[in-house]
Length: 214
Image 1 (cartoon, rainbow, N blue to C red):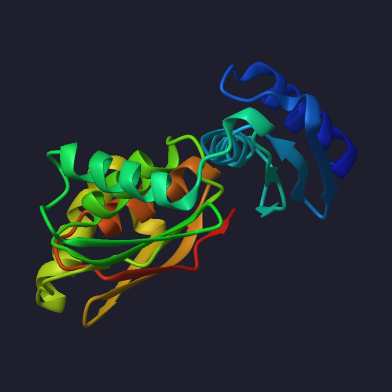
Image 2 (image 1 turned 180 degrees about the vertical axis):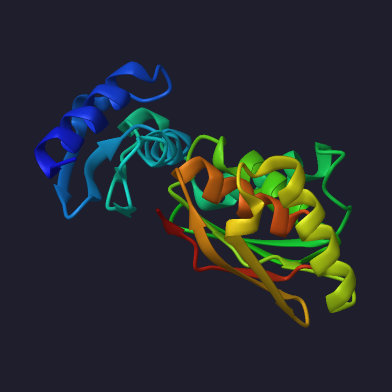
């Protein structure tokens, strides 16, 4: 697919997604790499735009340059925003109590600390991303405790066999609490499934995704 055609597909998908107001989002494509620019009303909409583009077939990478611009009457001070973040994390039953430290500066929320499972790291960021006033989320949460390399690898391989179309095309290597994924997948969504499978194993601290689109 040439870049011009891919750009049209990306624009059509952004217009189709009800979670994104694409009126102020710019799209440029070069060598199947999509650059998003412009501005949106919320941080959640910014994330939604990125995920929308990623699911378009033929997109190899996304460069995110979208700015969050809240209306003047909806600006939230850092002190008020920090209080909201602390409350939403405390109310979420999937987030361990007292495990996350919060810092807010000019609308940028930093999450620090550690959680036992990767999904808790994702849940925390997702909950914060939907709050009004958030311009960016920096997720520094670590996943602990670690598990044995052999145990992690067996669980990742088992998850890939359940979800991947061609699991034999994916090579899994584990060093300590880090998982390395190599090989090929047919579409972007399979790459995301492989990453999710790697993160689903308890004790995984980081995943290095070197998978390529066939």
